Image (cartoon, rainbow, N blue to C red; front, side, top):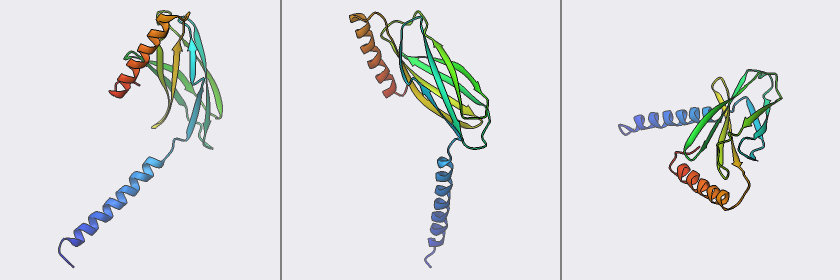
Length: 159
């Protein structure tokens, strides 16, 4: 045997074993899932949006799941506590989002809902279009918001 070949074989075996461990770790799914509806909503400033979170879980899983919503628009972010759900599952919970009256019409808010239980996390993306009376100003603001959100996302700064 050529010197050094044994070392290469051992290194190759270790890499294969480590790759198998990494694939196994990445393939492990959370023991719960959820769906938030509506996924796309429209609301006027000062109004509210009623969201429904439908939770399902693997048999035997009944640990608490905490929900948060991270919302952003124009590079401004806000995190909201949506509450905690206690098992058993399946279960449906409601959350009402109050749209601040000072949010201008035409703004599109991108949001991510995260469910966390222990080290497990599951996410779902949502969006909310703040509507007003319509018209050219709202249309322009909506277009500008969309462009800014796309730029921020491309730069890795948006949600």
